[in-house]
Length: 337
Ligand code: MG
Image 1 (cartoon, protein in one colour):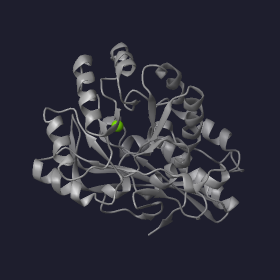
Image 2 (cartoon, protein in one colour):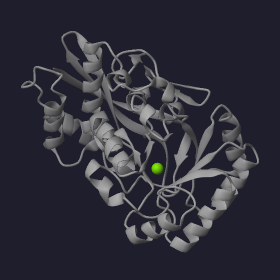
Image 3 (cartoon, protein in one colour):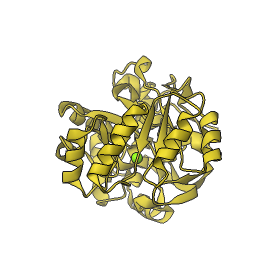
Image 4 (tube, helix red, strand yellow):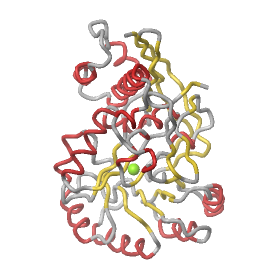
């Protein structure tokens, strides 16, 4: 198996503004894994707050030596080796994991949702994110998002209620809210969640800083809406500690080191009776389509990453009438365009 990688810069259609930062591009690394005339595609996305960059991912991938592996089907062995190269570098690991899944699916001539035995009719709607912006821009972005059945709103700033009211002046679709750790006072957070419930919000993602575990457990116990761990949560071993702290978890391939662990995460969360959301970074249709293979298993999807960029170079999963729509192509279901 031969591994190749190439840096690429995603151009965002709108500046991406969170409670703590704002940016217009996202660096990604595009990966190809070649074996027996077939090519598996993978991708690492590196939003700056995760601490990875073109340099760190290139350094990691340069250390990968697959010459000792002659059978792509021995995925546990191969990906166990990848995971052991460094402690962190989760996005870099995900790029190899995705490429290997794509390759193995292509050898089997089947998409992964079929290999996993999942019903493509059970995919969820995906939310579409309305970033923090001026009143007029929020109205415009909300109108542009008319085809989506669920919208996601970034909160955690002073004008939080205004954002919701502005979106509600345009549409009545269900909303989910991502606070990105922006609320530090638990009583204020609870009051806010009661207010949000009246406004038709479905769940609240990472309402408080990840370190405030006791406050978060109190909030979840009292909250009329589900709470979802995102920034608090990276790998599968974190999940049991979240029982009774959050209602559910947000799984992203760039945190889970790829599809293999993400699938196991769903199983662990279900065993703990927790909700599951499937999210993404800004990514091309490569990593988004890889995540989508799992989507028939989850409660909520937030897979709008490829729709937020203007220079996608893959054709893959489509959002049709707001719903994640899988295709019949083998592997992760993408072709390069
Ligand atoms: Mg989030």
